[in-house]
Image (tube, rainbow, N blue to C red):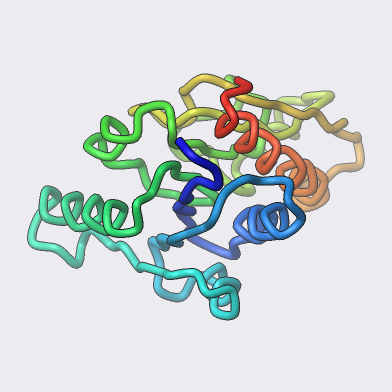
Amino acid sequence: MSLPVNLAVFISGGGTNLQSLIDAIKAGRLSAKIALVVSSRKDAYGLERVRGEHIEAFVYRPKDYPDEEAAEKTLLAMLEKYQIDYIALAGYLKLMPSLLIGKFRGRITNIHPALLPKFGGKGMYGHHVHEAVIAAGEKESGATVHIVDEIYDHGRILLQKKVDVYPSDTPESLAERVLSVEHQIYPEALQNLIKGNI
């Protein structure tokens, strides 16, 4: 696959990890072009981030289609239209359609705000993760980049980075430190995957 590759970034919210990928590409740290941003919500702030960046955006809500198959085929057609090579989930809260996982096997990544396999799985996203980490009395947390498969937060781990959990931490203060680590490791893990260094 010739560089730079075409990347689709899937979002559901603010898109700070999307921004970190945009910044990494501009800085020459990520050999990719974001050819498409897919959002599960039409009001996601992440869509604002791409307006001035000449990046195409597509709001994908399966409920807008007559059935699951029609929804998945539409999404797949969009990815083919933009010749997508890799998919990066960046705060995307929906389970990926199995049709897509099969088509892009080993080329879909996700960033999770904990040290998987701990604190992963259905319902473990955003502040729920940080609340669970603090409630469990963990001494460290962090972020994990992993390959996406058919099970939430289950696929092969590509990169992890730890942060300390302090006795004074709230879910919000812990989230802030973990997020800064996410922004560091996501572009790095993607670059390693794209270049075949993983």
